[in-house]
Length: 281
Image (cartoon, rainbow, N blue to C red; front, side, top):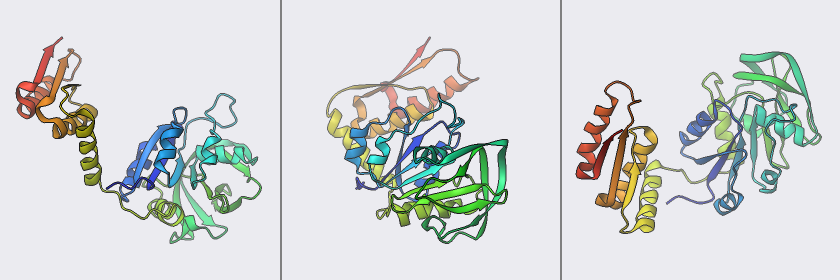
């Protein structure tokens, strides 16, 4: 069974790596969900009893008045927080640190060296290769925060407030270029958020199928099926739950790739039989 208080929330600020963060967390058998920064359902989050929050990177500058902001309600949830790149800079600004603008964007491999002991760097080499991708940087850490590492360009690459359980990384631990990134994320999940129950996809599928059974009961359901990942997974779960009460409709609108329509029909006609309906539009 899925344990409700074993959830990591990833707040997406538009980073190209957000889904990679989620993937790296799930690879460590930890359950996580992704919410856009401007569409956070706090009633939902309170019911989930979150174990931790990750603020993603993003393409904006925190110095821009129109850039995405940190919702202060996040801080009231009193769960460990890890800010990555733009997420770090949001935390720094919120706690009255100073953000500087680099004369040139730091992009690519970099080496970081530890300055102070940190739970986040347990088992991480003293000089570790990471991946940087930022224009802004921390020029002065907030009060009550300590700097835990510098890059080889003397840029602050991580800070933390252990008392508030707030941590920040200027680099991206989720990409494979950061050689100790997996260990850093593992430290956040298991040593800081204290995740104890491993999440298994099989358990999630069983729970979701049972949830659909209980919700839909004997109702008939129409599923718009394109052959893409989202609708295919949806139709698979629905079919497991309600069998022949599912009717999948595939609309060939003429904008699919060459022979893709035939492939979709061949696969799903075999799967759903007469409950698969093809429409030539």
